[in-house]
Amino acid sequence: QVKLVESGGGSVQAGGSLTLSCAASVDTYSTYCMGWFRQAPGKEREGVAAIDSDLSTRYADSVKGRSSIYKEKPNTMYLQINGLKPEDTAMYYCAAEGPRRYGCGWHYMLRNTEYPNWGQGTQVTVSS
Image 1 (cartoon, helix red, strand yellow):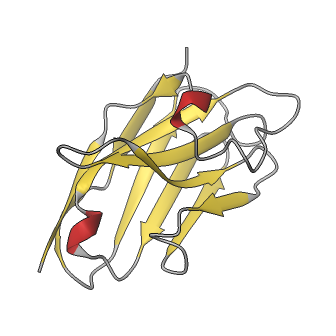
Image 2 (image 1 turned 120 degrees about the vertical axis):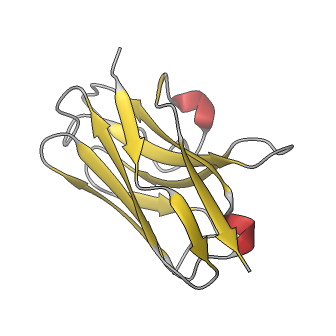
């Protein structure tokens, strides 16, 4: 099991930016695929962005063009979201799958069922 700890959430006004961090208990840089997911009250958990073991990325349409996911060695992943909207309000979770010899693959990166390791979440609240 990999322990994941998120940080960086908070309350911001619409149009602002946040950078979320996810620190893993093991080296995840080149052998894990990792993702950010979010869940708003009364809604299902949805994939926001993911980064594979080869550092390829995938974004949900809802954040494409205004967000960036990246890793830093050896064990930290980040998600920067700009132009925050009230509909971005949710609990944001970090997830990881690995170690893998090959990547998770583009079709699976935003599927929450692909990931066995999850953090506790960090709350993001965007006010209008």
